[in-house]
Image (cartoon, rainbow, N blue to C red):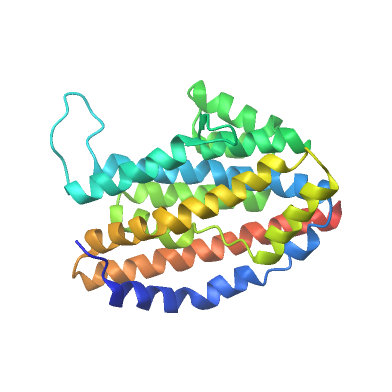
Length: 260
């Protein structure tokens, strides 16, 4: 099924003010050295992690992940989501070794000296049966970051694939202005061997998104919404809410930088 260009363009136009607000956020110009980058990553890693949960929830809705296996859902959507999962969960590092984008990000944190202890403790609790909300409340997760993750899991718990797909496709698009990418490139030169992996992560993430994920995700939304006007409007609502929450996350990181 082809992408519904008319509806996708309508959504993109409606979301343009929110995207521009993210592009122009003061956060980027306040990341001026390695210490600032570490603070950014220590907050942002939670968004990288919960993106994977959003992705896997979509896979559960669109494919059969149970045993015994049975044919389930739209075959085109199965192919689309599995292709995206392949890249996110098992991409390759600089040496061509398979790695998830989340694990690549935490490796980049370790390389530049950012603290991964909070995220590791968060994951340890999940691995031992603690709930996401329990971990968010019991650990010193920054407030805006906690709000961001909670919102993601509210979307997941809605159980509505088109809403989850809208959040994934439009609301979770990592808006990285060229000035921020240039800054990281400059840091790579200023601090040899300390931000190389983060630089690679960003470039790889953008390459995969531009070349494959964005077109596939938009096609997935088109299939899930079809000609249902209500679903398209619900996608709009969800995407706007996600953009607002990303701005909220950016505000929290900026406040942390200004206190440093």
